[in-house]
Structure formats: structure tokens, C-alpha cells
Length: 315
Image (cartoon, rainbow, N blue to C red; front, side, top):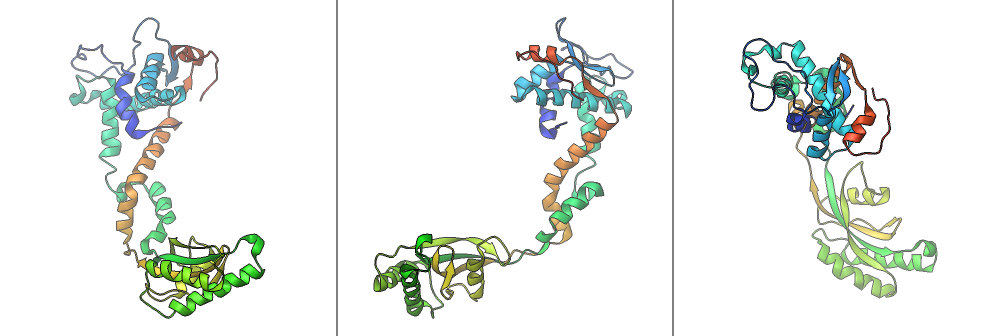
């Protein structure tokens, strides 16, 4: 079952129930959290522990959230799960909810058992926290990453190993002689020197100056390119000529970044927002395992939404 924590809370009021609008709940005693039909034609489309889920709830959720029938039904069933759990925990007897409708009891259940209890990384149960942390452990000490520019004399696949491949190599070595010993290079130097080197060998050779994607020592770029980049020792230096899949290159080490090391607590704080959403799914799945939810009239639900008829069981 799909359950969307933020959206369910926003859409909860659409599921209605409790006392009719404008009439307070009876004073004293628990609230009646049973959903009520909006009219004589409002049919029961599902039940949760015997309590009805009406087509009007699904129609309202589908319209209000602009979601499909299955998602809207999930919302309404999940809300009934929350209402049932609220009853089991006595929230329907809370004096602060004496004048509230059934929706408020379910929202309070979320406030008490999710928002108030799960406020930081260490509040998450180990079953949620540990796998997420292990998956992201590498972020505790990320390696240096480098950005680069390349000067390339291009060699199409059909020309590899032939005279134009040899000419491309000579051109890139002319470039190496011209600027390879410098340690203060910028892209503008490549823009100026590469055309001169190509013209000195064969002006018909294709060439380009381009940007290399930032990469780490052991990650992400084509192998020969990455190795050439990390053989240079400081920004402003250029690699020796290297054969890459695209032709003959020289790689300019442009800039670098060494991410700060994180403590486990700092990493946990960064992981917490997404992990808390995962906790919500885990928590509502736990409710679903202790309650019964099933569609009892899918055809009526389709008719209420204006969809073609049909029936399919959903558990």
C-alpha cells in the first residue's frame, strides 16, 4: 500500500465523518470515529476492521490531490487505519479532542507517535537508521574531486591507426612542446595554443577545447582521461599527451575540492529528513499488519469516480 505522509495529513479533512458540520460532538465519553456517508447514495467501498470507507472519501481525495483512484483509496484506507489505532490508544477519550471530529484523532496520533517521538536521527529505530547509515557511510570522508578542461585533436573511429591518427598525435605533441612545461595555464591558453598546434601539422584535423565533468580519484570518468587528470600535481598544470576514446588529449587540471569530513552525528543529521519519511512508511505498514483492510465494492467506487465499470479485489 502506498502512503504519502505529508499529503495524507493535508487531505485528511476530505474523508470526513464524525458529527455533521457545524454540530459539536457530544460532551463526555469517547468520540464516535466511525465514518458517515454524505448521503443515501454514498456507498461503502472498503472496510477496515469492519469500519466503512465511503466512496465520497475517495472522490474527495482524488479531486483534492489530483491522484488516481488507487492512490485516493489508499489515502482513505490509511486514514481508517490511523483512526483505528487512535481508538486503540485511547486518543478518542482525550479531553482535548472532546469537540473534534474523527479526523483530528488520527492527526493527533501522528503528532504523538511520529512528530513528537521522531525529532532527530537518534530517535529513529535501528531497523530504519542502520541500513541507511551503512549505505551512506562513504560520505563520512569523501575523497578529493577535480574539475578539468581538455585540448583534444579528434580522431573518428574510421581513422584510428591510420595517417590521420598519426597526424593527430603529432599535433598534440606539438601542443605539449609549446605549453606542457608551464604550471600557470588556463582555458584561454588552450583556446589559443591548440589551433596553432593543429595548423602546424594539418589544418584539416578536427579539434576542440572542452570541459571535463568533476570527478573523484576512483570515480565516474573514462579511465584514461581520469588517470591523466590525476597525474598532474597542481591546478594550472596539464597532463602529458594521452590517447582517449575520442582522439589525442591533454588534460588541464583546473580546480579541486576536498569535502570536509563528517562525524557520524553530522552525517545522521543530513540523512534524517529522508529517513523520517521512510520511517512513516514503516510505521503505517506496521499498522496495516495489525488491521484488516479490503475493497468490498470496487465497481461502485469506479462509478462514483466516473470510470468504466469493473471489479478487482484489493488486499
